[in-house]
Amino acid sequence: MSVKVVSGSNSRHIAFPLAKKLGAEYSFVEVKKFPDEETYIRINTEVKGNDVIYVNSLQPNPNEALTETLITIDAINEQGAKRVFAVIPYMSYARQDEMFNAGEAVSVFTVGKLFKALNVQAIYTVDMHLHRIKDPRVTFGSSLINLTGVRELSKYVRTHLNYKNRIVVGPDAEAEQWAKIMGEELGLPYVTLEKKRLSGSEVKISEKHLGLKEKDVIIVDDIISTGGTILEAVKLLRDEGANRIAVTCTHPILAGDAYSKLKELDLELLAGTDTVLSPISFVEVYPVFYEELKKVVG
Ligand code: R5P
Image (tube, rainbow, N blue to C red):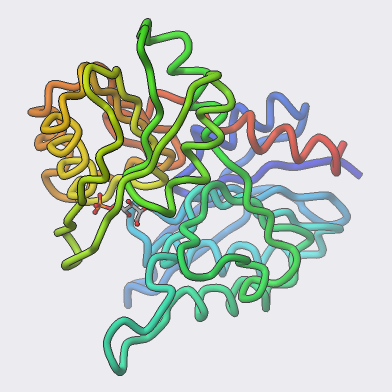
């Protein structure tokens, strides 16, 4: 019996160093399209009797990635793997976690049910968007383990920023969990702003008179998607007299023209992890998964 790391289309850059660090065999899944556009999957390694770690982020191309991931994990199980561990660096569909308007599908429930049905040993993800659902195991089953990329982001900030009068800022109430971790890691205080979402791309962030005048600020959030949250937060912080501003996030989705809008902000630092590959994915996330997986395989 050996341990095999199998990568999906989106995450070879995570699966390869993870396999190397675990001393496991690495391979990637062959993904093609049938003539009718359905997804064809072939596992390029013998999985029978082995522990298999499958790695695939559900961004970019969330619909394709979800289909590929579900079919692959099921196939690994069907082909007789001893145990299957799913590493899903970015769990898509987690943001629709409530029926905001009558008739809307709460898609996180659907995705949770699909993963639960796969019956894997464990599903590892990082900084899953959990605003209204506090415990994702309710929908994904007890095998879901939600880790954080914020300690890796903090290490990056420590080595790349030489701020003096620093404070960590979460752009909304939900970001307190990440601001707290970064604050602890860097030995800094933290505060959160107040955000109201107006639409998919528009938010309003309100002033809370947090005494940020002349402070050097490090913003931390889970996701940058349209960039609307960060644009508003930076504007508010500058209005409040903040000095230098750095922005970090776990999942730099950077949808549409988000990156060009963020570049115009003249930030001291703009960095995310590589759960999603983007121009700012400077921080490797595989060590987070390695630390957990080394306890259970090998
Ligand atoms: C939501 O509440 C999250 O924590 C992020 O703040 C949000 O997803 C960022 O999205 P956007 O970049 O589109 O504002």
